[in-house]
Every structure is written in C-alpha cells, then in structure tokens.
Image 1 (cartoon, rainbow, N blue to C red):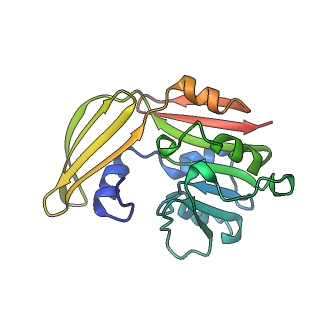
Image 2 (tube, rainbow, N blue to C red; image 1 turned 45 degrees about the vertical axis):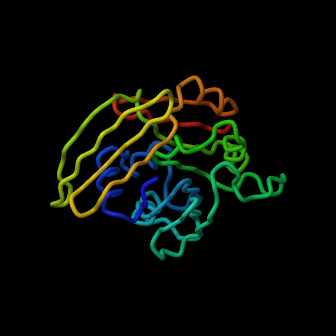
Length: 209
C-alpha cells in the first residue's frame, strides 16, 4: 500500500477519491455529532469535519498507521478486522456517524468488521463508505502539482492493482480486493442499505435500525 504521506499517494488518490465532504453530507453529519473516521490515514475526513466546526473530542480516527496532523482528535492504531474495543453492551452505541473513504477494499469482509461498526453506532446512526465501479484495465499519464506521473491499473480475479511511477519519486504498487455488490450486501445485512452510483464511484449508506 502507498505511504499516505507521500506525493505519490496524494497524486494517485486525489484523482479518484470521493470528496470527504460528500461522505459527511450523505451521512447527515453535522457539528456536535460523534464521528468515527475508519481507515482515516492522513485524516482527510477528520480535517473536513474540523473545518466544518467539529470539536476534536467528538472524533476518533482509526487506521493501521494513523498519520493525521496533531489536531487533538483521538487517533487509534488498529487493523480494521479487529477494531480495538471490547464489544460489551456498555461499549455499544458510541458514534452518530462512521465513515470509511475509499478503503473498504482493504477490509476482510469475513471478519467482524461490519458487526463491530454496527455495535458502535447509535440507533439510527449511519456508516457511509465508497467503492469503485467494476475494475478495468487502464494506462494514464497525468500531471499533479507540477510533477509528471504514469499509472497502470488492472486486476487479476478480484485483486485490483495500481502501479504508479514518477521521475525522481520512484515506483509504487498498491493493491486491494474488489468487493462485489452481493458481497457487500451480505456483509452489511444488519443495516438498511442505500446505494448511490455515478459511474466511477459507488457510495453506500448503511443505517442502523
């Protein structure tokens, strides 16, 4: 996986990540609500929430390598397959909203991830995440912030791969699993699920009953 602090990461993801504000809007998030930023990385969703008026105490960012700036929010280091809370009833119903931006492909859907997120949301809370449309082969050349990049994208079975290179910045490979709609519906069966597609990206709104 690309280091989320590098220029290569920024160039690659800036082109096909959904705007963090879009996911917050779809979740119905407003300042004062508690927010769980899953696979938060360098904190794009967290920064957008703070820009909109969130209090740092209302946000928890979870990532295998959390690297958000020192904004005062709680940052938890954990893989998504084993979220670090004891799921006793007293620990349930913590968050109003959970968001996972373009990272569900790194999650093993056969783990307890979906169940854990469901437990941690308050009744009526929403979990919003986005995925790609069906993967396809492509070769792109582009410029980002004055630097030239070349990217090859493809897939083998359900494994999606992006190979990216730039003069002076070297080569990186990132890969993740493409989850089908059926797999996602099955994993999040305990939610009321709404799906919104625009061709390049699919956004999932999962509401806890």
